[in-house]
Length: 361
Ligand code: NAD
Ligand code: GLY
Image (cartoon, helix red, strand yellow):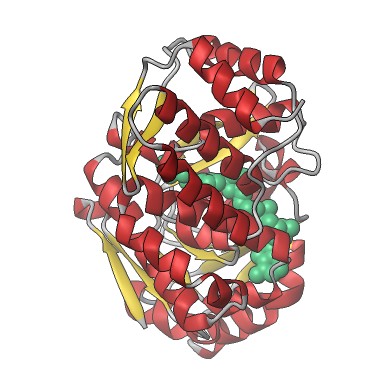
């Protein structure tokens, strides 16, 4: 088993990564957090695959878990479902010392974590992520949220989990498109923080796509360690943490424009990273080779490097977003593979050129 520690003073916690960990979740939980009343929150897809194993493991270790199942899908990540969870928690007679276990992808981690952060002013919670995106990103760092009609993740909190348990074996049942989507975030860590890790990904594409558990486990561990380093320095995103949004400015505009239909988050991030890299080239921060290496790796991993969307529409959505948030347009730009800067000096003209390169209208 590998472990990564997130050092945040009294909010510190451990991330445990091991194949088959779900089957011994109960004993890990008992030794890390002690005995408590627990409530398992999961979605309908994950429940049909992993509820039985999880419940049995908890029961073997002396827990009597209550279970709340939310229908799968981002549409359920809202205040109405948070409120339904509160009802279920009251019916389970949870107390302030009870522990919420969020078993699923980022949707369940965010919704379950938000419910935990607000129920009785906050009860302990544990992340048990089952998608690659959740294992390398959303389960670590304490961002919990629900969506609002005025925007995605607009109602939320910084609320750290007490522990994160990752079983890479759960990725075997994940649809291939979901796996690829998570791989975009994996590539992101290489570009923003560690050239050596990027090189490791380049050398291991075949093993990654074949879900070689040793390779996947070491990738998850490295991503969690890199994210932990960033979160430890800037837990509440006052500066540095924004580098984790590399590729996300354009990705969000694309997602809004295409109304999420047929476009996964990771696919949008893949194109978004290349747009940011094209911007960096035009600002003379990097040579073309830095963009080509990213393009090559993303393509080999089965991710899109171009997309059909209108340049004008994406541009105006990007600037609209900036106005809504009341700030300057901020871009995370690579200066080499493994290093980025945050710039608010990207001109509309340069962004238009970069978008034209990647969006075939
Ligand atoms: P998701 O949770 O909706 O999961 C995607 C699909 O995979 C769902 O249908 C789910 O039921 C299914 N699934 C989950 N695990 C499975 C498994 N092992 N086998 C088979 N099917 C499985 O989506 P996601 O991509 O994991 O997460 C996206 C969410 O994460 C968004 O809401 C996004 O806002 C959020 N997010 C949060 C953070 C953060 O820091 N909190 C960071 C990035 C993304
Ligand atoms: N996913 C970005 C963050 O956690 O800050």
